[in-house]
Amino acid sequence: MKKLIKQTTEPKTVPSLANDLRQLGIKPDATLLVHTSLSKIGWVNGGATALVEALFSVLDKEAGTLVMPTHTSDLSEPSKWEDPAVPRSWWPVIRETMPAYDPKTTPCPHMGVVPDLFRTYPDVLRSDHPVVSFAAWGKDAKDIVSDHSLDFGLGEHSPLKKLYDKNAMVLAIGTDYDASTVMHLGEYRAPNVETMEEGAPIVVDGERVWQTLKDIELEEEQFLIVGYQLEEDGRVQIGKIGNAVAKMYPVKDAVDYSTRFFTAHRNFRRN
Image (cartoon, rainbow, N blue to C red):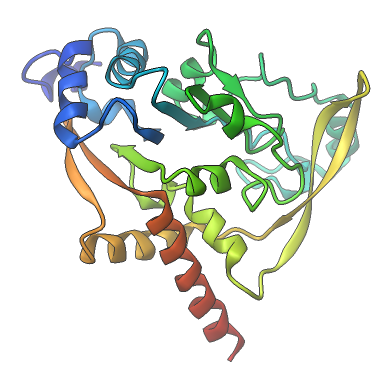
C-alpha cells in the first residue's frame, strides 16, 4: 500500500476513473469485455469497488453491457496441476471431494479482486461453465452468459462468440495481451488444433459429479505477438485509467488476427 501511495500524485476516485474511461472513448451503449490489474491504477479510494462503480456509471444498463472473465482454474483436473503440483495419491480424493461449481458462490480469486467482486453485484449474471465462466451486467447480460458449452468452453458456443457477434470491445486496464481471453477463440478457429480432456466438479440433476470436458491445448503465451500486430495496424486505442496504461480494441479484430496467427503458426510447426 505504501508503494501505491508513493506512485500516486492524487487519489483515484469513482469520478476520476469514470472521466478517464470516457476520455478513452467508452460510450454508454458499449459492450465491454474488461481485464484489470487494480494495482497498476495507483491508490484508488474504494479499491475494486470504486473501479466497478466507475464502469457502471459510464455504461447505461439499458443500452450497454459489462463482461468480465470469472475463470476458476483451480476447479480442474489435478493430474495437470503444475503450480504447484500435488502428489499422485491425492488425485482421486480431489476428484471425489472438490466442491461443485456454483455460479452464485464459487469465487475466482486467481482472476483478481475486481472480477471476484463484480460477480457478486446485484443483476450480474454468470455462466455455468465450471472452469472458464464469464459474468455479465447490462442489456445483453443474459444472452451472453446463457448456453455456455461445457466442451470447448472458449469456442463457438461460449460467451466469446457472442461478444464477437455483438461487436464488443476489449478493455485492458493495466494488463497486456497475454491476458486477452478473446484470442482463445482464434485458437479454436485455426485448423490443426490439438484436443485434450479436462475435468471439473458440477451439479447434474441435483447431484455433484466429476465431469469430463473436452478442450484444446491453449497457447496464450503467443498472444503478445498478436496484440503487437494489432497495435502496429492501428487497431488499438491507448490511454490511461489512473496510472494504468489502458488498451481498447475490437473483439473481432483480436479474434481474426489470432485465427490468422495460429493458422500460420501451426502450419509452420507441421512443416
